[in-house]
Length: 127
Image (tube, rainbow, N blue to C red; front, side):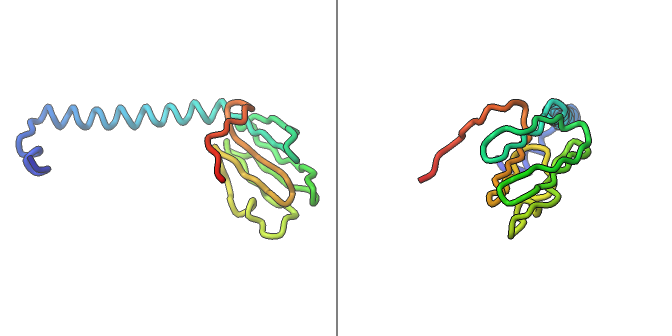
């Protein structure tokens, strides 16, 4: 049975069910993402020590003192980014806005993480 024969033998109700399932699935994904984003916090650590826990749904700018100097962090529109950091390559700044995951400034030892809890879950080891 090839792909073309599947559609040749389909009836109008089959198309309706197929489209309904796609719409229902997309709706579920959107709702799930919205719920996860609304409950998220921004965890800011310096040198492995938790400094701030901030809600991601409240806009704010903060300065955090790291090993090299001040890192500017901005929370806006349920997203977070590092605006400026005294590190050389500015990889943390280039990462841009995130609404999940982690931004790490290794030279300045600043970590910005978005999540629902403060548990550090290790998902794998290398080496």
